[in-house]
Structures are given as structure tokens and as C-alpha cells.
Image (cartoon, rainbow over all chains, first blue to last red; front, side):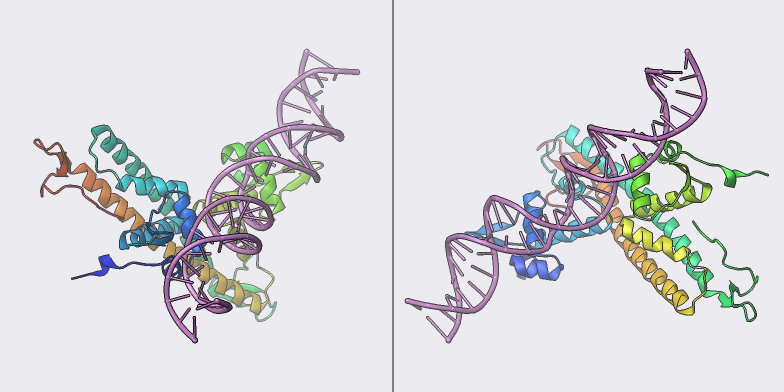
Length: 147
Length: 147
DNA sequence: TAGATAGTTGACGTTAACGTCAACGTCAAG
DNA sequence: CTTGACGTTGACGTTAACGTCAACTATCTA
């Protein structure tokens, strides 16, 4: 049962797997987002580092800054057991959730407009007489759709 | 019927309404994202500029770069009627849609984990004997949840 | 033993997206 | 007329998130 959890990675392997450069991993470490083991001079990444990295990159894709991602990761690292700390963690956690939900609204709105526009373009034909682009059904020209 | 469409804005008004600085609006103009009318020296923003600005800012919140947003806005500005141009527009449009859908997946995943973690924290109680934080139902400690 | 290979730490460069500041124009109000 | 309020154009500064490069170290291989 020496499972997946026991796998170790060099900086090259991990960076290759996630398609980032070694420089990036060292930078994340500088910023306190990762803290791999050290075997002498070299870094050795464990499964937990791998999971954290995946988390970081996903956060980045969603638009968070590294500082924000760091905070979010810190939320997970509270196991000591101070009541106030628990409350703060929960509060920040809910704030982040709010932000993400707002962002999801923005994303959906943007997506809808783009899809609507794509559908519009698809349904356009060229008028056989004037050579202008018109709506296939209504016959109206494209004019000034959208923003 | 001199509707909403006829309203004009100074740079101050528009920037205040959207909570950005005038500098930002000038910068967006530099980058070709906006092109307000000029009355002599001053800029005059119309309803269309307002709509574009809203679009830009939403795109920004969703994580696009200004360059990308510029491309997306350009998609809307094609009314001349060259077939290849229409095809290209549609293609890029669909690419953007793909990217947005991928991002929505990331966002949902992040959101789910955060919500799950928040729920976990909420359900923790302190053990009356050891003083440790444990799961209210299972009695297990927090240990190393998450990344 | 020499070279190739993989890694390390600084130090400095780069890009995007503005902020900040200086110097100037303009137009209505006192 | 001059004093603000509002606006303008450069020019330079700043921050985040790395890229790039130099100078080293350690280890493995031929």
C-alpha cells in the first residue's frame, strides 16, 4: 500500500507536469505558498505539495492574486484550536465564497452575451441583391449590435 | 423620447459611476478600447461608450487582459461583410466561449471546495476533555484537511 | 578525471495596468 | 482679471509575477 501519497517529485518533474517553469515553483516558495522538503540543497516535493500546487494554479486561473491564494491556503492550515481564529477563518472563507459567486455571475453574463453574438453571426446571410449581411429570418442588417 | 441613449458624460462622471479613475479611462482609450467624442480638448462619453466600459470592466473582473477584451470588442465591430472575416470572427468567438466554460469549471471546483471547508469548520466543536477541535458527528480531529 | 546533467542562489530585466506629478489650457464666477 | 474647477498631455514611478542570466555546487557517467 505504498500509495500515491508517497510519491516524490523533483522540481523539474512537478513543473513539467503542471506546465510551469521551475522558476515559478521557487517563486511560489518565496511567497510562502509552497514549502517542499530539502534534501541537502535540492527540493523534494511530496503529494501534499502537488495538491497545493494544483490549488494555486486553479486559483490563478480563476483570477486570484498569489497573495489571495496564500490567504485561502492559510485557511486550511488552522488546526491549533483558538476560537477567535476559527471564527475569523470562517468569516474570510465566506467572504471568498461571496466573491466567487459574484464572479460567477459576471462570467455567466459574459458567456451569455458571447453565445448570443455567436448565434447571431451564424444566422447571418448575405443579401443576394445588396450583398449586405442581413439576419436570415428578419432580414435586418447587422448594424450596431452589442457594446 | 429623448431617451437614455442621448445622455452624455464627462470623464469625471463616468469614472465616478464605475468607480475607476479618469486615468483609467484615458488609458483604455490609449489601448483602443474606447473612443469618446471630442469637444475641442475635452472628452465626451456617449451611451455606447458607457456600455462598452461596462463590458470592459466585466471582462476584467472575469480575468481577461485588456488586449483580450479589445479583441472581444472588435468581434462586435464587424459589419462590413467579408466572408473570411465573418468566419474568423465566429471562430474566435467560439474559442473565447470555450475558455470561459473552462474557467467556469475551475470556478465551480474552487467554490465547492471552499464551501465544503466552510461547512466542515462550522460543524467542528471543541472536545470537552482534550480541548481539541473535533468533528461534531464523527469525533475526528481536523488533522490535515484539504491541500 | 573530466564532462554532462540537474539543481541552487542572487541580481537584474520585463510586461501589464495603472498611479502620480508637472505643466498647461479654458471657461464661468466673483 | 484672477481664481478655481475641470480637463489635457507627456513623463516617470510602481507592483505583481515571473523570465533571464551568471556563477556556483553536487552527482552521475564514461
